[in-house]
Image 1 (tube, rainbow, N blue to C red):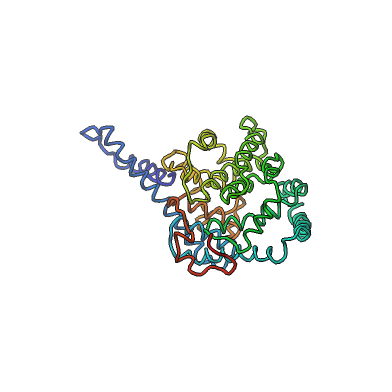
Image 2 (cartoon, rainbow, N blue to C red):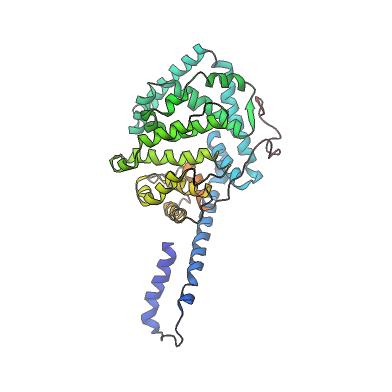
Length: 380
């Protein structure tokens, strides 16, 4: 928006004193004066889509050189948005990735003794990697070492089970995996304030995944605890990282409720979130990550609120993040690495060129995508 208006303004300032144009003999009505506004708006909207394409063209030629998780994350979202079969291979790779993990658990991590050994090893590795890396890593380690089973049951086991469920599939060992899930009280994780401060977005995903799969339903308990952990009245007392964690948690409540862009959400059901965004968007944009700003805009799109002013603001803000030299949204420090930046750039594409919600890809609705599924998965 700014470059367009700057150009128009600059031309007017340069041309006026040189041309000495006469005043028009016929006064221009207010109605005629405003006719240009929609044209400007249309040009700006077109620039959003063009920039989404710019980022796509940066990522897609190199996509299959990325790790499987990154390929799956990008490809699944692009398929879900566009229904373009060119992303089907990315979806297959995502299925293969989650099957590999579940196969490993079936073979090596299923008895109580094996699970405990896995948990001990996992928390030890987590300490080595994250225990001394930044405040968030330290917080997560400090909190999670009191509930180390969370790393196994919530982060490592539930996630691939839920993804398979999204696809309309299940692992051949699904019944036993569900039995393992039921050994753990997820309410303990989801209502603990320290856990929320460390894992807000992840917990939002997990409580909705459990509901989606027909397992423990602790969604309402989590949301109640989340509000108590992050009362709006204490926003200004939060560190920047904790404020970002709060908004990240809120965006993921909406994402998880939509089953990740598969279904629309009701504004009324989440009125407290949308009202908060409208009231505090400028503060959010100034104090949150680029990923989170894009997520806020997408939350409105999931509720069918594309005309809400927050969407336009979010799009303009994200557009301003684009590094024109590297044709993508870099990290806060300016790092243009494509792999580490895939998450924020995928979100940026979706925000700038939203294609709606689609219950896809699923085994039932998109059989061509699932013509050959990795061994170990089967239809629900």
